[in-house]
Image (cartoon, rainbow over all chains, first blue to last red; front, top):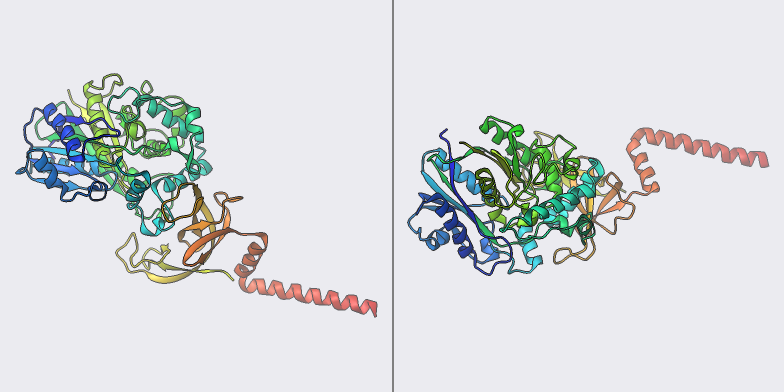
Length: 375
Length: 142
């Protein structure tokens, strides 16, 4: 299989944004194209989880292509709930690896903050099984159930979970693209209001607007996509035997490591899907980055902080950078590209290999992408 | 006495799902209808203080693993005394499943029912022993 390279990366600042979604997408796309020194790609892959409901727009790939001045560049849209951005990267990777296109613009974004929070929760909640939704199961409710089992069965403590939020806010404070650029204290996290007992507000990512973009190329650049893997699981959470690990992550990681020809031991920086802080601890173990049962203690010891053995979410993660759904899977890879190229000003870590992990729905459709700097 | 929960069983892998669905989530195989007991163990539970529209606050949600295999989402009147692993009964009220803590009486009754034929033997032995005691007592008094 021919190598696939990353030629450019760009994103908007995440947070409450006045611009409409096509303009946010265009801002990110232009930044990535400029970094790649490319005027027009051979293909545009657009990621948007639900523009139909959030902004009342359909046929979104064509809309974005025309808005970008690429009306006659082929464009398509990819959707796998909250991992849509990572799925779009996979699609573009496959197209370039197959030799169908030499350069592909991948761009994803979401506009959500103009809607009231209950409405946003309801729209996101439609990615949950119908029979579970009928009992009031929202994403925070399911995360609350998972957190309860983690505390009861694995020895993970609420303090360890809360430290994930503290760490990611500290990282976000160094990232000018982050939704939240202020640190929080452990006490503030542990005393924040209960959302889905035992899960509290500061264990949950915010609702954000924003967009992120990459240019993938058949032509050699300093950063290669070394491996990319996809894993899935039942839509219904009640069909799963375990709530303390995500099979979709484990399967995606296995596939990505197999393609790359190396394992977690070579990963030096990771962007993981901390939509809820306990999910970061689950991810570290599912990805093999930390031995089973050790993620909480490793986090408390600072191993996953910027200056630690394995920096995790140097961008601030979903918790602090923000989570404009379909932008997130792409923004994780944008951050890794900047980290590998030494362009992550103010939060730079030393790394040649980075891992991005994206969760779709309640871990029904997950992705793991491995990037490698090749000098 | 126990509530029967409509479910479905996969003829290939034996997986039991509730509510019943047409196909197994793991195989493209039509499921067979099944009816299972409304007793099980709490897998997890949570309380929402700002539940979605249409639900009363606070909303208590539990995921219950029924003894016959399926897992089910339920509502509850409260979570006082409930832990991960607690024994609960599940019953439908107006087509919504509710969990409730299994008290000592319900647990004993469940044990008896589970014991089946052996339980009946034990019951009849106990009954005749009680009768003998009662007759014996009367005899002594006469």
